[in-house]
Image 1 (tube, each protein chain N blue to C red):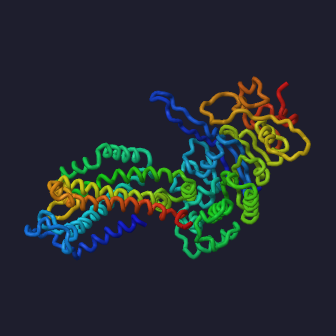
Image 2: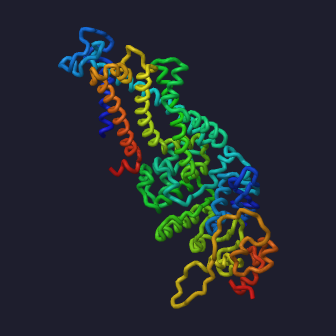
Image 3: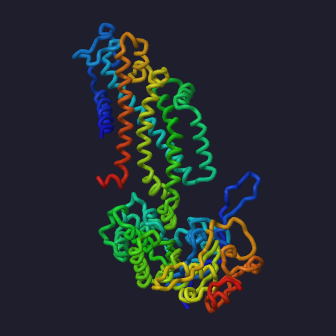
Length: 333
Length: 264
């Protein structure tokens, strides 16, 4: 039994909206509605969902970059929620983050060496000799030349910039790396290189990933476990192969259906998702997905489905998971 | 380039005038009043017999002092307040910004007149007045551009690695807004020179017998039809300085951007 690196339980985050009038009741965007999951050491945990479902909010809350409303985030058994910024500082070397946009996440006025060394500089006083060695070491482990330290970010391509960002995350030898869509801003050919790099780094350093993406193919390639998020809640969670082979929530089914697959001469029947998520601003009973679900019936309006085990280590929040797993997506007869 | 050379030329004039001027700046000699342009007096003399070129050169010194001191006051206080507002947000920001709005409600010259009215006329007081006027200008600009930088992912990355707000302000925010501030500083420098000239013209700034472009304009006013060139020289000097500084600001903006400068 390997140890748990990250344990998130019942995480809630609501963003207040600007009031429409002085005496109006405050409205909220329910970005996270009690999200719970655990990641074991050395594993990759994928979080998928369309934009607006709360993926990035989850990342920021795990990284303790914004206040959490309620719930708990434990990293290596240490509670993160409720600690002040200064109390968290010594902990931060254990969890680092890779951001989505490699153009926006590197300060254009800093050299690569300074960018990569930033987490070390933030923690405290390390001899500069040691720091330089560590920077060179980590740069070569992400496939960059140690002589690149004096260059500026604008001298690198998107893929190389993301390597710099990964090097920065790796420099403190963290147990957990939270990667928020790390490849979605890159070309497809470069995506593959960066994904392979992430995999290699996991093999050599045993680092754990919380990997956020909207791209199912990427998640399938990299992750051991996947959670599907919809409107601030996890609707399905399980081992990647189980979840991809027999999705137990119609939303997962539709997402998987939308992934283009090469199949010559075969016309696929596709169920398309209509509408879009703009963030939930009111709490209501029933299933959150019911307006867009092809399998919806009266029960979905009355009862809110909870996450339950539909197969070993496979959880889904749908009343009709069994049917879904046996027959796939279909309209209720 | 042009802006840089004009500014350098003005600086040189000011420097030379510290040690040497072609004629007397403080001495009055009625015998040599209203002399035309000649080899000895390149731009002629004024109604007190002082050499106009010498007065202009000494006036440069005065204008540059005013500009440097007034802009420095504005930069230090304004940028400090702006960075504080941007880092703290909440009521600190609200307080600082509403205070800036309040001082913006008064036109520049009017507030300078008000401050000199309280402190009394004089060179030093006019500099302080112009400096105070500069504070909210820089506070606003700094807070606005710093707020934009705070939302960048690299700032979030710095937070995620555990850097405090003060360190982020020094290491990330300030370097990234520096070019904007320097450009604004050159513009404020030009405005300060104009403001000082205006205050001196009104008799609230530099007091006689110290030379100042604004006072030269004031004294030339009464002789406008009799000796028009006496007004043209200081007026031209003011225009040249403002023009040069504005060009310099534009040039500096290009030089200070690491992405633009390296491509050249």
